[in-house]
Amino acid sequence: MSQTATETTLPKTLGQLRSSDFTAARVNRSVKDELRDNLIARLHKIAANARTNGEAESLFPGIVGYDDTVIPQIVNAVLSRHNFILLGLRGQAKSRILRALTTLLDPFCPYVAGSELRDNPYEPLSRFSKDLIASLGDDTPIAWMTPEERYVEKLATPDVTVADLIGDVDPIKAARSGHELGSELTMHYGLLPRANRGIFAINEVPDLAGKIQVALFNIMQEGDVQIKGYPVRLELDVAIVFSANPEDYTARGKIVTPLKDRIGSEIRTHYPESLDEAISITEQEAWTARSYEAANTDIQHIEIPHYIRQIVEQIAFIAREDKKVDKRSGVSQRLPISTMELVLSNAERRALLHGESLVVPRVADIFAALPGITGKIELEYEGEMKGSDTVIRELIRTSVANIYDSYFADANTQQIEQWFNLGGSVELNDKQSTKDILASLQQIQGLFEKLTPFKINAKSKPEVAVSAAEFLLEGMTAHKKISRSEARTFTAGEKRKRNEDAANYAEKMRQREQERQAESAHNRTRRGFN
Image 1 (cartoon, rainbow, N blue to C red):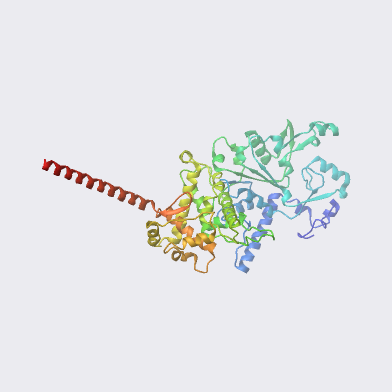
Image 2 (image 1 turned 90 degrees about the vertical axis):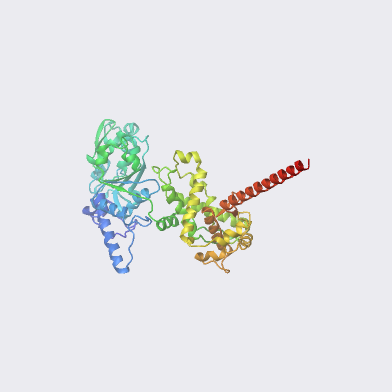
């Protein structure tokens, strides 16, 4: 029987299984051997496709930025048949990588129908399956598992018990069946035994109590465990994988040394190393491909400028280096994902308010996405004193300045500055339609001539032109060349204002001195006549 067999053509009884391609040699492979064999076959296929097409296929589709760092280490761990742990801060795709291991399992795996331990029909483990096969022989019913059904995941919390993971005695089952409490048939198995012949993943393993960790390494090493004082030997066939935060994992008392010693490979994950990688992840994960009902006559298209994507990602990069942000907690990649969704939603709202057909996010929409950022950043004491909103606004301004420099580092904006210095001002907010804002922006001398990096011209769509122009103004604001109020009114820069205030003050002092001198001269003249 081929690997492409469907559930309807799979053997239904033990006798049919023995006469099929699912031989004892094939089915009796351990899970780790199965993962290894399928990984080798996958690597051969990827290499062959690369030689034929010249394009390298990803071993784990959807995992971005790990091709040269994390994935080779995972490959080595699987080839070595290791239990391994992924160490990384939040939002580094640890759980996704563990779930992707199911792609290395066989499409279908047989087990004795009704078995809690999903017993191998050729080598049953539980008393239930052994008795059933002894009674029915070749007529023993066979059920099948898919790769997804062979993956069991548990989030570790301090209240997890041995009964949750390993099992417990079930007095009700004992009373109904008439068996003694010490009998294997009275056991209620936990998650780990039920993951037999599959992959068992434990997230945040340091949060497990010490006695649970002891039970884990005992069953990993010896294959036996005590349930309520009754010794039970379970020769489980499980590939056990873990995830943890590096700070928790390395702190004393967080994980018992014997368990750490029995984990074959320790693999560290990381955040995206470049903006392009981060943008690819956000494009993949964020809900930006939005659809509308047929009755909708307003919004027809969504266009997200590349510089908006860059600014959103840059926020996370800068936050990870900012001393006001807690580095031990990390800045999750979920931050730019949720921020991008909120940015687009604010642009959507503005388009709906003004009946516009094209949705184009602006920098102002990033400031409106504060709720998507505040909950994903843990602040240090200095940051707490300043307030989360203030810190995040500073992060956004710094991000805008950095991306602005990548487009306009050599641009001469003196003409634009002069327009504002001569008293010009422009207000850009969601209350105005795009056409009204465009008309206001066109009054600024030299503004649109500077937008050549975005190929803005007279034929450009108003929404695109306004977004690019606002980005330029926001960049100038971030560099303190001009100013912007909370009401989003752009005016002359703070330095210019300070200079004008100083000049006005000097002029007033000069006038006062002149008046004082004139009055003094007048008084001297009056004394002369006396």
